[in-house]
Length: 241
Image (tube, rainbow, N blue to C red; front, top):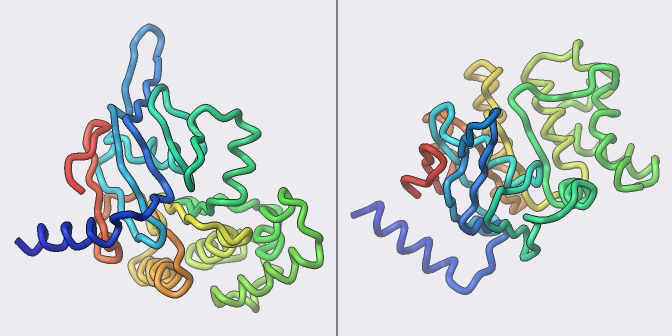
């Protein structure tokens, strides 16, 4: 009853609002030789501005493919995807890249930092592709690294940083262009429990204090307590929301 009550309350609050992300009957089918392998099977969902959503499912459930769709990293075989009201399902890669750069910040399990660049340079990098002047890039990157507690590590390269510090740099980089949506794929997967908790608290603060829409993709039940909404998927379909 409590769960049903919460669901009705959430639906009531979102009534009349436009979703920031909407998937409509989305299929993603990969072809391996002559065999078709569906990763998503007619999946539909809405995510509203300011939500903190955890997408959960076992390995092979389609959750990473779903993240790729939401993050403009791939397009569906069929179906439609809307980001802030714009249909992105048929766009070319250069158009998707521009939207990714402005609207979405990514945090990955393996950090994906450039090993030859310092923390400061890694955070500046996404702004380079948006033609932001260097002095502005540097000022913004400094402020973001200070926010994540790394103001004394700005000139260190990833190999000189701990896993938790690298993930903090990754979060600062994700915020570089002030995106509306942060997508985090197993953000604590390579961290110990203490650092994992710190990273999740940081994401929670971005949601509560900055109003960022946070979507995490995980199989870790411990992370679900940070989300206000949990979407379970299995075999490319939503089985519980």
